[in-house]
Image (cartoon, rainbow, N blue to C red; front, side, top):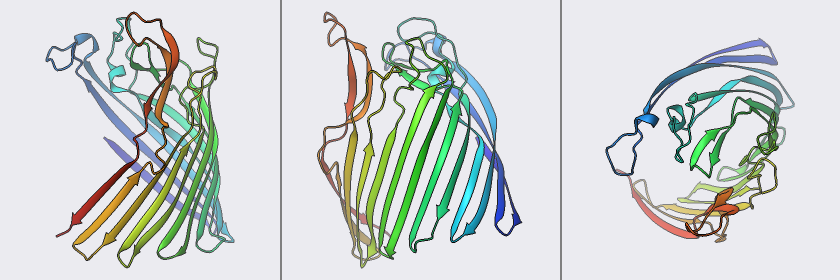
Length: 306
């Protein structure tokens, strides 16, 4: 449950502010079972946690000059915990666990500019920083998600672009690059936040409803990232190209075709790095464990509207 209050003031012709505060209340109700498909609850990891917090925010906007404005944003936010961690007192491997707060506060700031100086082209460039009380990490040994004991700092740059040369065609390109580090070394002596995304690229070409025809080609790219805090193990890159084609016959009937993973790449959808065994008697090995992306797929659809 949440609420939000906002106040806008035009201080001068080219100076305005937006102040706000967001309130969030969460109730985590966990019922843990000893075995799958049973009704026998595990009281050690079952329970209820009620928590909430307020997040004030402030934005200052200057301009526009030559159809370009500058802005400064700052404020507080949060990320929610895995609900199981709010009531757990025993890990899956039997070791003791400490229940944690369901909400971890963050604070951040951003400086950027938005420009329409080129006709039909909207571009936004920003530099940002974010401090988090804790990071949510996956622990392969226990098969559980845990919160890091160290806070973290993230900072990066983002560039978003939308270009519409005609009413029926849109081109877009977004790029982001970020760095995530713990404020102190962990037990392994590393400061890299595992699984933190570094480079992201999203680009697309969209043909709007032009005489009933619509189409789109979209590329998503995720660059390599650290899988452990020392940076000694990194993931591979992931790149997906998807295609959409649709045709509207009339106001009632339309058909579409979607092709996912057009290049049929064998990339990783998610990857982790930890020690495991392929069988109970096998020697343990520390390696990358991954879930593959969906292979090339073609889907057809027909839609009727009444």
